[in-house]
Image 1 (cartoon, rainbow, N blue to C red):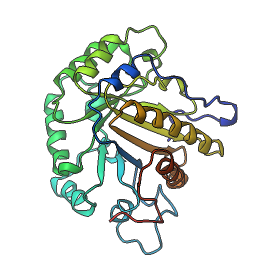
Image 2 (image 1 turned 180 degrees about the vertical axis):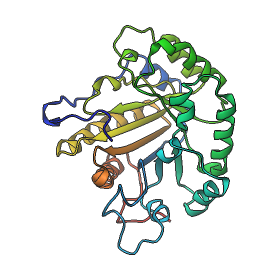
Image 3 (image 1 turned 45 degrees about the vertical axis):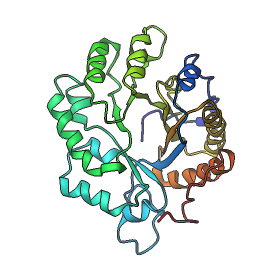
Image 4 (image 1 turned 135 degrees about the horizontal axis):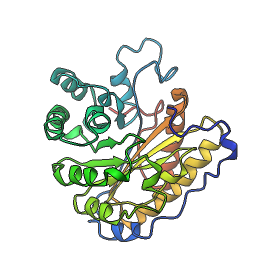
Length: 291
């Protein structure tokens, strides 16, 4: 993962910024339902997660889904899958497992949200075969998608079917440099119950906007392949503990790396700490498998 990569992460200030002033109000207005925590990686294939799978593992998804309780499903960004394949994903995974699939690039990158109603309907019909295991759907916009396309983004969110949970990641720096009035977008996201993805990457500290728009925190953590990544995770646990105390209902926390090989180790460390600090009982990869 090259996005947000830097040559020397030791020179980066990884301090998490304070919450956006409106985040507290959003959390105060939540229904304070049962808290849910989902932690996982972006992929399950053996090539990226080398040394994660025991020798002789025959099915990667079956094994992965018994180590983690969720996956940020990047594979759906690149193309459509048959109904049979999606149904097979559902069948292979435990009942509690959740998928957070990325919207196909034809919608986000090629058509840039314009005239996409047919594609959205097809994509949702495809993902609906995951049934209750379908978690929040993830819309990631191209880094060149700027506030010049503000109206296209607003129209897309307005038309999104509310029965499917949606989260949006915006990458162009102009969304975060203070020169764009974000309040109409934030208010619409609150009204439509759409999550504002928070991305923690070494070279893009501006994407740590800390502005929640509903009771779901969708966090994409990109490790920089250095020892300081563990301290960064410690800081996130403190923030999530604060949000839990304020009433957040669900956290989706996905661990990436510039080199994905150590993502499972970071995620394992995070799960152990979050179990202790947030009084949870998530399965720990390699220690208590999740059946």
